[in-house]
Length: 276
Image (cartoon, rainbow, N blue to C red; front, side, top):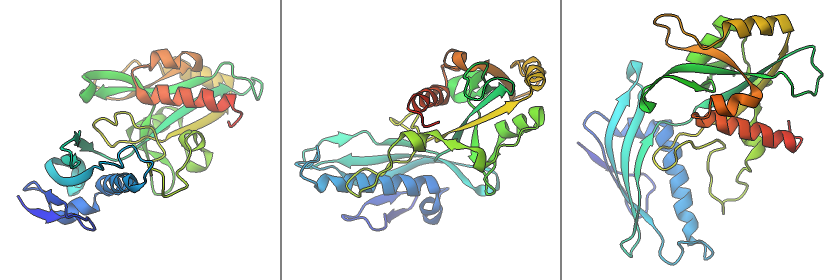
């Protein structure tokens, strides 16, 4: 196990690595880079007299890397660390962190094209059902999650299933970033510089999820066909499948998924403000 000083840290912050992790791998890991930059900025704000912790500011004292998971090809995927953050009064802040970085959630809404342009009726939301072992589930309903690839197209397992079942391809220029519309961006160095996304579990994980909206009007017969096919029932051995859920019921059907509730709340709030 090796130790190095965190670059640009004053006073010096030692970082203790696991035997299977190198300094360069950690420092180039996007999730770590985002997390440490955000944390450093937030800690620096304590210098302002109006800050809650100004009189006894907290400092990052050390970082212990506890475990790492590598993806195919040796790419660093997940990382567990313990950050020691305390003030000179002996008070500390919880610092157990699971680093995995951001992803995207997609609120995909379909509507028959013979319904009025501005009507909210007969809208259907595409949900995925798939195993989520951390939740102890083999069939959790949720908003499709994944990433935007280099070409700006929604990609990942859910996107592949949507394409195979419906032929729909979802490109970046058709998306509305609801989190960006709803959450104010930090315009000043005197504010915290958090990511523009929903933090599902900020007490233990850095994951942030921008929620995108995609709406498409399709022929009624096509939508009816998909409703008959996308029921959530899985063939033997099938890991991921799709279901269509009425928009006004999605908060119930997918209520265990934070992305569903965030997407539904953002959609309703932005619609009421006339932003979508």
